[in-house]
Length: 375
Ligand code: BGC
Figure 1 (cartoon, rainbow, N blue to C red):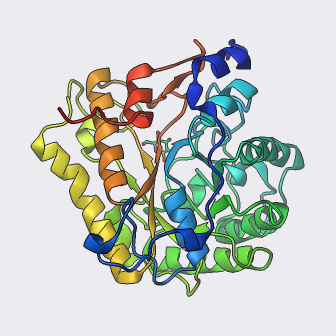
Figure 2 (tube, rainbow, N blue to C red):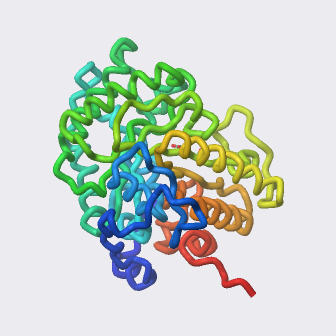
């Protein structure tokens, strides 16, 4: 377990980017969403004809983000080396949006009502409220409900009666939504990280509709994210059937080229070989094609998308990982997609070294600095 030793002040001095995010401009200040590209001024916009002006606004305001991963999505806070602590929150706040993965399912009653563990929920409050107070957008999700998606439970993750697994997701959302009903609309809910395997196709569509209805009982217009199956890969989009609702954003994840981003990850049954670099023309196409497919889906359905995760496991060389980070970020931004790097400070692809109290500079620059000016 890595301790966070540096005081907050050191971080604040080191990172000028920690200034609060600009407040959101009112929707009317933006160019028309349906104008053809050549008639538009300013940054690229996604199609939004099936959602409210405010949800469209939020989709475009999410901008540059990071996942506060492996903290509250661990089986227990601290199990994966990180806890909700001021230096970590301050580092996260260098980004305009923080996606906050939370393993609610392991902190709730094993019964259908899934009554939340109040002490754990207060830990979530701490992160949510601190980040909202800093002017950030927060995407709060249900992450690693392993029994729901299928797969081997993590150590210290408990199993429940299979008959209540799905209803517990609905009960969790009823409570989470009620708890945060008065928070600003910069708090966005995401119903489930990466549905896959057991939770796919119509089964996922039906459950997502039930969970959304539970949210809507207390949050009639809050923006909610519902992503496709196949781990949120754009390949799952053709199976996604969204409920009739004007406040939705669809999150997608990008880990292509997978043999680069997941090289040598130890948790795969058959680990992929290491030593892969990035990014040649073929690899660039592997990144951009799924993004273009997703955007085409978004245009057909009139629902904006968000790139909720991308990252490259630390076994890859840092120069390649920084090149990959910049590539995906630029390709997302050029398509009007907000994004969130996986993840802030943990073992997969952290951009903040919590034990040293400093940024992994090549990654930070690739994610947060403007590209170099053309010669
Ligand atoms: C998972 C992480 C994993 C990452 C990259 C995330 O959705 O929660 O555990 O490291 O994807 O595979």
